[in-house]
Image (cartoon, rainbow, N blue to C red; front, side, top):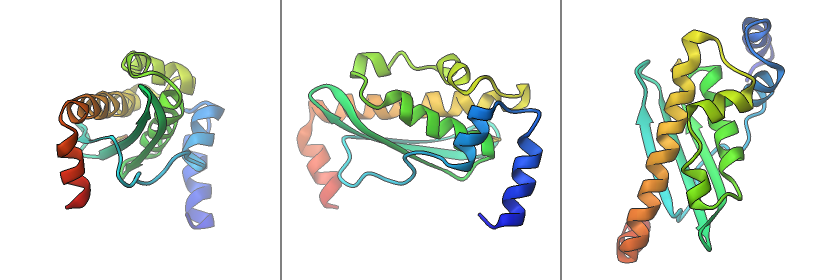
Length: 147
Ligand code: FES
């Protein structure tokens, strides 16, 4: 991000967002895809922004989680914290991560950006369901990865 754009972005966030949310928006963790992933989902929220999540699962535990979004600063913070929260959890534990878990971990979001947390939670849920589905039919994953 260019320096003057980043300054403006941070100024807009200050006062309305927690320090944790600002830090995750400025320096998001786990950005980008995971090649040959075990689970993937992409969803578009009510605002029209899109968020994608990739999962790598080993022995029933999320070994890697990553995300991408074309959305707002809050969606960057939500995607980032969601991947941090999901990593190292079992599939069952990760399924418990919902909008409130994300909001709590970020120290809250302004009311008009709560839906960004909902988008991240829904995308994670869909990526986990994709993993569960692909685990039942491993040939599908091999097919997808070789396309
Ligand atoms: Fe669209 Fe935040 S994800 S406004």
